[in-house]
Image (cartoon, rainbow, N blue to C red; front, side):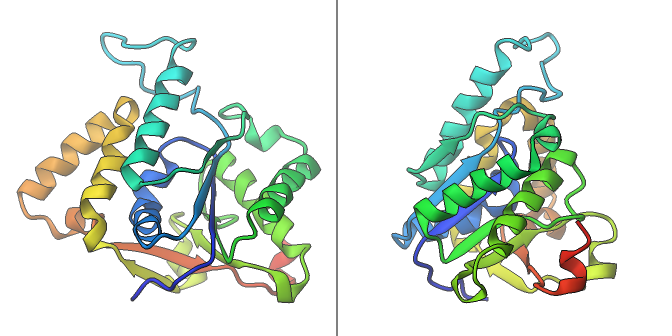
Length: 231
């Protein structure tokens, strides 16, 4: 589907590289169209699994490496409003719930987005993903219904389609293929093996691999009382 025009887009994810695989084509499209995009990345991925073999990083040096990779990803997407929010990787789930909601409220108040993109609560697998999603949804839920921005959510748990159905929004991002590839390659410290495998699958003409660079899928959050009370 054609990507709808927006006033301002706010993207909120917990880790460097969360944006690259799921939404970098969409972000790149908005930036090419001149739409302001703010990306709030909550951590620097300090606990990333890959330190190299032989090691290219230590736990102390990895945050700076991942920070530079995040900045390179932003550059690849044409993004000039990158917010590094200073939380610690794998501890977002332990942050105070109200402080998390207030962080999101402050971001929303400042940027006044017409669209917010994050993960979908209960369908994002990683505890940091889930905590981020809950905070964003709670912040928007507190707003008057007439003032709420649209909320597009990324969901990839095994039971997603069974419970949520097919995605509500599918963006055709073929024209942003190079930008998306650039964003993905920017996070090379953590994704080298994945990209190597993807290059192999692309060379073999595997449709599922090319699908990464063709469509990005989102669910629109369902504002109903039953679901809202589930967290």
